[in-house]
Length: 250
Image (cartoon, rainbow, N blue to C red; front, side, top):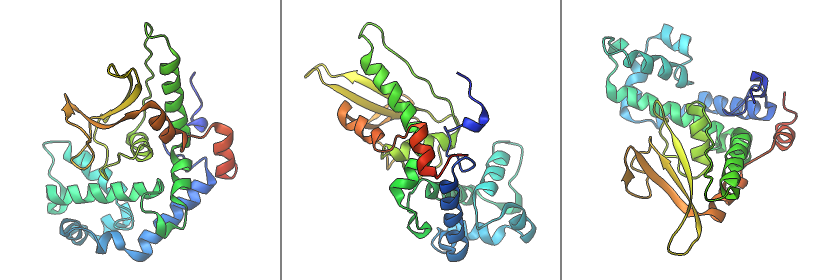
């Protein structure tokens, strides 16, 4: 099925969900008023704030928001021949990337106390439809005969990966890298014939992995099928439930 853009739910949809839009606005207002992300930021981020000229601050809304400037500088950095403007160093770029990751995490309820919204509700608003889709793929894999393994492929954006990591409890407070991939496996354990779920992530950093690396991936979570399904079900929302929680999806 190919859906119209107005039905898009793989990334947190502030355009379609009024309550999520209001939550994001509160979070942004809190950042502007408290400047906690600047004052509590590492020295590299504070040095960057001092380097960015006034016209660029106005253009990118920086430092009230870090995401637009992060996107621009990351794009420039990907061009090996380009030098970063204003003498920005790699340490400062990394600090900006982390600040942007923390900012978007607020939308998902990670540390959103200042925004005045319940963290669990914020995550369900942002990731409920995505978790519903992952849950459907999980159930299809379990229902299929062992001789007919199934594969569900969901393609999205970095802001698709992050909500899933948060919902699964394996978010490492880093922006997902280019070509980030989350793999959810349903396996039957030989020693006790029990179904288990294993999550592998190719963008994991040191705080996240729960087991040794496997090729380009880290195993960030492994638990029984029932426990894993419970994680997803706690967040998942079908279209009607999501629309009701949003206050009427647009």
